[in-house]
Each structure stands twice: as structure tokens, then as C-alpha cells.
Image (cartoon, rainbow, N blue to C red; front, side, top):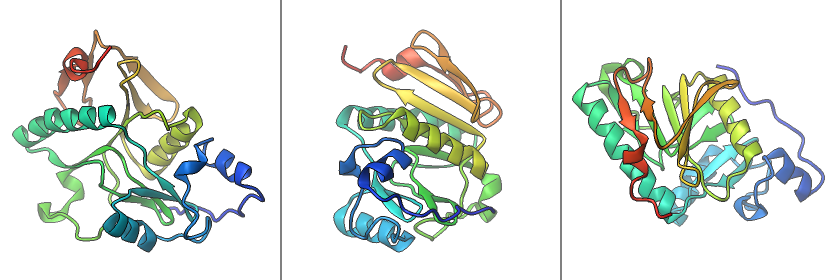
Length: 215
């Protein structure tokens, strides 16, 4: 597996935020100092403060999710989980499931699916941050996410070997389906979402997924 190459920290907070995709400064943890954080910090903050942080080049970035996004995430977990269990395809993790994509790079998809082929003897890993590349990674977009942040996250997923990525937008009621960093299509509320080669036969009318959203 390749690893994240260490980068010299920018001279200013503005430069750091730009490197992280133009995210709000409120999402960047200053303790431990940017550039010095480790996976141990990710686990401790989750266990003690109940805050989810991703690790990017030694910097902790807090995950962001509002109530609407959380409701939608859990609806999708139920819909996907039922199909995965019925067809005995693999296992799923929810929005607190951190994965090590590469040494020094920890991401936390809102939902991830892992086929049984990646879980020897169908046993879940005990490591709080396992070396486990999802077959499918799903991100439910929040107001705090920026376009450049999500573009970087998309590159990280495919560089690590993720096969399929869905970006779910409650605001536009669409799902952007990626089979590569530069290969995508957008599904609207009037269309269906398919699982492709990752979840064969899975079909979800998106009107069903977005039915309970306001507006």
C-alpha cells in the first residue's frame, strides 16, 4: 500500500485551510498541533469527547453532519443494510466507522460497505482504525463541506482502491455516482440508484430516499 507523503505545513492558517479544501477554520483541531496528530489522537478524541475526526497529513479535521443529514444517513443504512443482509454480500459501517486508507490518512465515510472477500472468515477487525478499504464509500453532504474538500476526499478513496463512491446531496436531492475520480453520473429524485458491480441487483428509487426531506 502506498502512503501519504509528509508535507511541510503552510506558514499560515489560511494556507492550511486552503490545502484542506477551503473548509471552515472551526473544523480544524489545534490540539494536537496541525502536523503532529496521529491515529491515537483520532481514537482518543472519539472515545473521550465523542467527536469524529479525520486525519490528513498530521492534521485532525472534525467531521460535520446536521440533523437532516443524520436522518438521511440512517434511512440509507437501513435500505442498504437490508439488501446486503438479504443477499449475504458483506458488512456495513455507519458514520463513526473510521478506516485507514493509507498510512497517515484516516477517513470516515458516512456509510461504507465491505464485501466478505475483504473479511477473512467473515470476522470483523478489532482495530479501531482498520486497514480496510471499502468497496463502496458514501458521503452525505453537509453545509460545512466544500467542493474542493470533497474532490480531495474522492481522490483519496480511489487512490486507495475504493470501487464506488456516492455523494448524496439533501439540498439538491441528487446522488452523484463515481466509478473513478473523473468518471461520474448524477441521479436525480425522479431516477433510481443502482449498485452496479459492487451491489449487484440493488435498485433504489431516489424519491423513496428523499421522501421525508422538507422543502
